[in-house]
Amino acid sequence: MSTTVQSPHVATGIDPRGPQVAAALTSVVLVVVLLLAPAPVGVALLAAQALVFAVGATRGAQHTPYSRVFRTVVRPRLSPPAELEDPAPPRFAQAVGLGFALVGLAGFLLGADLLGQVATGLALVAALLNAVFRFCLGCEMYLLVKRFTH
Image 1 (tube, rainbow, N blue to C red):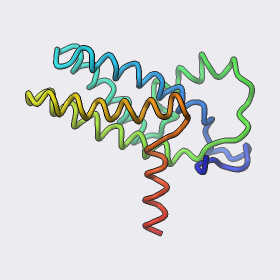
Image 2 (cartoon, rainbow, N blue to C red):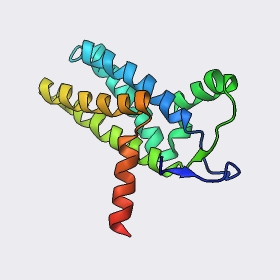
Image 3 (tube, one colour):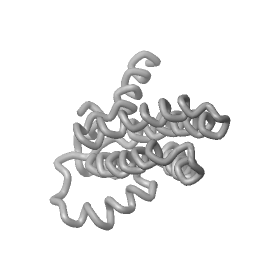
């Protein structure tokens, strides 16, 4: 993937498997949201996911609760990563996820359930692409934006 940092000694790089695990957890949450919303518990779960995205967008994906799960439960059972990833593209992807989650929340809260379902569904598709194929749609968007703005 083109978002990798070549040297594993770069202190700012993140294990690329972390965002993939986070995407899997996000996928589970978003599936449950789609099954339960517009009931209050589904909307509350989407609000919680929006908070996770907000942390990832403002502080970096490596600071989310899902990253903590990766570091404490999954990572100790794996060999060291072959390379580290630049944290900027996953951070941008978290901002994109936050945007979709906020649109979904607005839809559900305003009674526009179809808007809420579509926005949540789009976030789910992006999360599944990362979880299953390690294709980070938001990361690719970041690279395109960077290419066209420089």
